[in-house]
Length: 264
Image 1 (cartoon, rainbow, N blue to C red):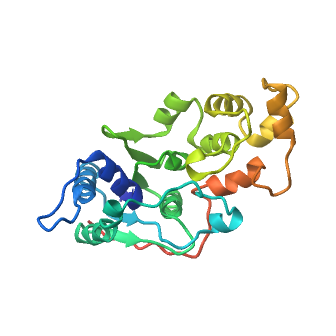
Image 2: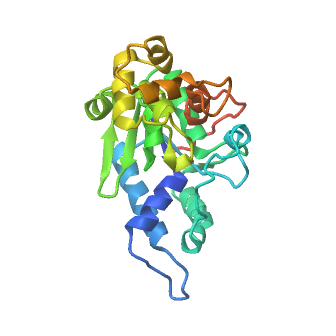
């Protein structure tokens, strides 16, 4: 019998709701706009997907293994606005009342839990997974069994392998290779100087991987400067694309964590 899992990126959806809904407060002044949008987004997708099981993942304050690998990870991030922070814990309580299992794990991010849900799905026959998030990082998890419900500023858009190829011209699994070249400014992960998204997509579409780019570096359609930057690889340095892959990857973690999924 087939089953469907809905895995929700709690921090991302709450953040989207906070900035997408005008300020609202209770009679005693407590902010509620993020909670209002959070509930609406989740209820709409619960109704659309009708999952057999659902969970929601949240980040914790503790540093993750990425911070330990690279002390500059997310160093450019500003703190959460007080009005948003005040709605974080209530959102977890609301999620429980909606029948969602709330998941967090010290040392890991919500993204890692979403990746684990996707990995779980891949190993289960007749099982599909929908990931509800406002973060494009989860696009790398998309497969024939995992789709992303991307909560944009306007609507929630379904991304499957065909949609990813239509938008980016590469398979979902290759987006990790693209990010390894261009970096991720939102997480303060540096890319190769002179290589932006357009160039990275073109290179990975042609050579299929970072290693493939290096193998054909002399013939690659790059400026002399970009070739020199790529040639300056340092073993296990944050400047090395393979090291950035470890920071960017969201689905290949094998940690001791058993997911318990509550039926909705």
